[in-house]
Length: 367
Image (cartoon, rainbow, N blue to C red; front, side):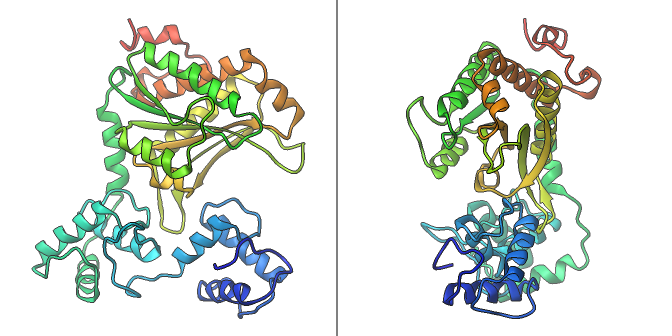
C-alpha cells in the first residue's frame, strides 16, 4: 500500500487499492474507496489466516503481506534480485512444488533467495531446459507437469526434525542466539533474562550470541542477520507484550507457521510447546498458548526460532512479577529445561515442571 496505516473510516485511492487486492483474494464481494466495516472484517480474516496480529488495521506488516498475497505463480518471472529479494505467494508455491519433487530450497518462506535459485537451477538441469535460475513460463510448466505425478510429503519439515535429532542431547558445542526485545516498557528486563540465560548456557558449553547490548537497539533486519550469520541451532526472542485492556495477562509463545502455505517449523513448534509448558508449570502466569505466526523474525531466520512473551506490561500483576529478580530466575530455569528437553530423546524426558538442572547429569549432559 502506498499509504499506511489504513483503518475504519478512511477513504481514497489507497483504500481502493486495498479492496482490489482483497477482492482478488475472494475476501470482499466488490471494490470500494471507503474503508467500511466489511473491509475491516476482511482485513481481520486476512490477518488471522496469515499469522499476523489481528487488528483490522492495515499497518506496514499487513500491507507487505497483502502485496505478497496478490502474486500467483505465473504472474511474473521469478529470479534472484538485489538488493531486495522477490517475495510473494508465487514464490511460496514454487518452493512447495520444488520440495515436493525432491529439490531442496530450504524453508517455504515466500522469499526467492540463493537456495531457491539453486534449487531452480538443479531442476532445470534435471529437466533438460535452459539453466539460468530464472523461473519463467517454460520452467513453471515443467514443474507443474512433474508435480502432477509426484506425491510429496513434508520433506522440509522432516529435514528440520532429523537435523535437530542428529545434534544429540548434549548442549556442548551448540549455538544459541538470544534476542532480548527492546520494544517493551523496560528493555532492561528482557536483557536481564537473556544475560542470566546466557550465563547458564555458557556454563554447559553452549556458544551464545545476544543480538543487542544493554543500551543498543538494532533493527529487526540486523537481529535477523546476526542470527543467520552465527549458524545458530536455535534462536530465542524474549519479549513483553502489552494490551489496551489491563486484564490481559500471561505468557505466550510463537513459532514460524503459515497456514496459507501449509507450512510450519516442526522444531520451532515443539520448542514453543516446551517453553509454554515449563513456564506455566513453574510460575502462576496464565497460559496464553502457542501460536503459529509469519513475522519476519520467525520466517526469515534460518534456525528454528521462537518468540516468548513473558507477561504483559499493561497488567499490574505481570509487571510486578517481571520486576522480581526471583521470578526472572524462574523464567530462566524454565527456558533452560525447555532447551534441554528439545534435544532429549523421549525415553530420557521427564514430566513437565519436574526436571531440574541437577537431573541433566543423568542424561550425560553435564558433569
